[in-house]
Image (cartoon, rainbow, N blue to C red):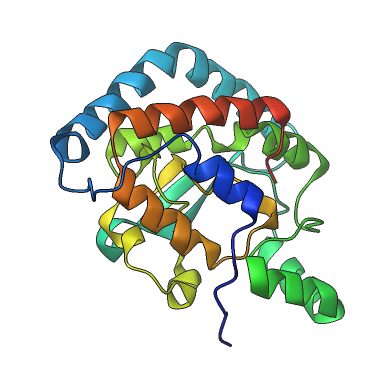
Length: 229
């Protein structure tokens, strides 16, 4: 199956490209090579006293339902190196089989999945999991990925291993995947998977402390509006 590059919505482009106006490639800058990692470690350690107890509390709530609270999945990292990304569990334990059965029975859902690699009405997500996703709390364990250096606070959305064959760009592989980024603060639920190439190319050209600060501030707004999916 071949996916065709679709256009990012005008609203998404305006939000992503609006006030950020850096045209040169910053991937080799001092900030990209050293400052970005320092910012990641500083902010994660500052947030730890609040975040760690919150993760522990939610993990206990999930454990009380009889499910293992943490879930890890192989993702494509910087340079194409695989790594395991951690999340709080939001899906049923037989999620993969349930997805295949659902897509086989629903052609419209299959078309949506092929285009976006997401489902607005995902049968795998538990009721409590929907709350965690809306609030983005399920993403908090990825801060441990940031500490280990497999992820950054800001960067491209981590790709699943099978999605690598669908990705037509190169920018993703020059960056650490991020908990948040251009795609995450855009109209992400309306974007096709291949739109990520445009977001990643744009971010690679604009890596700077100012850019990352703007994205982190926008992320607060996304979490507040509970637009996670």
